[in-house]
Amino acid sequence: MAYATNHTTLAPASGRSLSTLFADLVARYERHRKFRQTVLELQSLSDRELADLGMNRSMIRRIALEAVSEH
Image 1: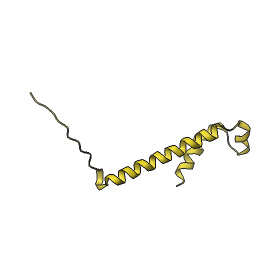
Image 2 (image 1 turned 135 degrees about the horizontal axis):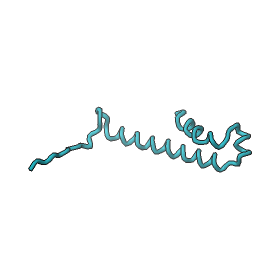
Image 3 (image 1 turned 45 degrees about the horizontal axis):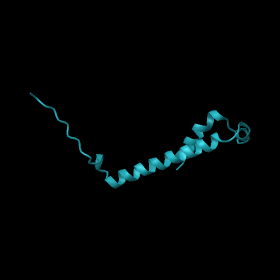
Image 4 (image 1 turned 135 degrees about the vertical axis):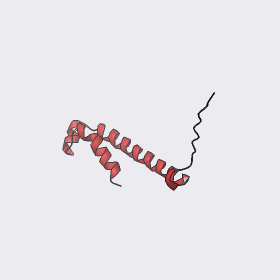
């Protein structure tokens, strides 16, 4: 009977250190947190308040994405 094994390692790809991978993960989490906070704050505004800012509800996710990608 033949068995196939797949040995995967946790070694970082392309020479990146574990601390670099962790830092990237933390940065991604912070961007997601900022995105979520921006969406929630904009969704809490009334349609009139959004219009005063020159936006509508369909623009909220795009604006939140722009806010986190400006770094």
